Amino acid sequence: MTAGTAGGLLQVRGTVLLGGQECMAQVQVNGFTEWGELPVTARKTAVHTVKTMLLLQGALCLVCADRHERADPCRLCPPVLLQMCDGRGEYPITGDMLRVYSVPTRFSLVATVGEAREVYSALEVAGLEWLQTAPEHRHRLMRAVVDRLLHLYPGTDPGEVHALIWDGSRENPYPFNWAAVLADRDG
Image (cartoon, rainbow, N blue to C red; front, side, top):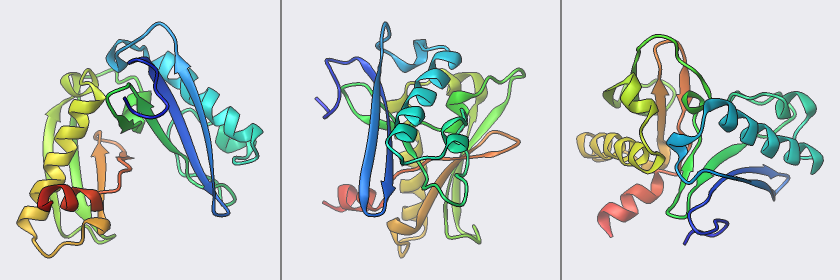
């Protein structure tokens, strides 16, 4: 069982690195055992509660704590790593998980290197299927995109890989330490 989880119950965790110290807040989402069952409003509420707890710890300002969607922090606040924990693993909470899409859309899962984004790998997925996909399967799909990038460009440093989900109008960062991908693949 993953640390911080209780028997498969869903938890939302937020972590901030502030002055070399890690601040963490976590809430249990009662009544649900699968992320896909959770309405978007309940997801936003859990994320907002975690951010409010980080505000009370002094890790975020009021403006950053009040943002429901994943957004870049203000100049003073560090970024918040939001994760969903289900007893099987910990998975990043991405902006597309906190939004309601009114029209059928397609998503592109993209892994790229550096700011220029000249080197990349991508996979297009159907919107409705993607939004209903469990976090561990989403992670496997993103992992496959990153693995393909590392296979196509063998000299690529996994620590330089950035992953994102493009929903047709905005980029949703997929925060994960991809340096471990190479260690898993080679070890």
